Length: 291
Image 1 (cartoon, rainbow, N blue to C red):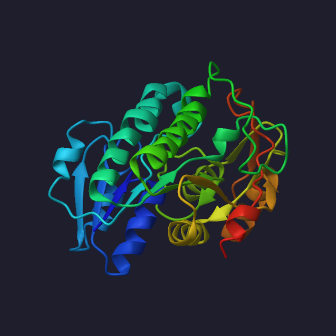
Image 2: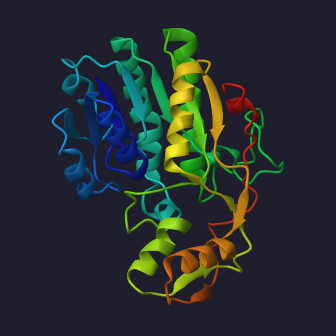
């Protein structure tokens, strides 16, 4: 049995689908503060899928899972996105601290390896490019992005401490801009935001001048990296997963308009002051060494 938290989110849904199509049994957990019930309806077509509507920070989670034989845990539960930095800062912190502690305790009790979905946000506003896993970042804990950035950094520290002191087997993936099916139409990250606007015949909004560079990785390639980490990754280690080929937001918008034959136009809006990360680019040497 595989436990996937954040199962109703974009990555969680794709991960559950992959496991279910492989014939594995999956327990999904989500509280729906950002995940969609549509994704759960899709997953519940599989008889080997069961679901708990819970917050991973709920102290009752371990009790609910006490009878389950869990072979691996994939922790993906945390609000994300620039707009949620203002709306859900405490939820981000609770998921990344109390929630991660709950799951570490369950993993130790069940003797199950743990995969943690960390983020490139641990690097903050980086002063070096590309970012290696040894780079300790440039983060402002009191700034508006601090809840997410410091939350993920704290979660990695909690997991590493459990590995050192409680025998937990765990790896953390620092994720860079993944895209693919089953995203929410409320998602304001570039690819889903543009595709939703194209779907509804609206103009594509670019915030700022559009020259911001982002590396985009398709979900299937991302999941291959996840499985590689779980098979060969060193416990208590973090690995970058992403593309090392950055694309400008302008080029992304033009590509989506061209491939969809959309008649929408590109319009420019004032840049969100919270979206100031322009230099994110992963070094992939460490994960490439796994094969």
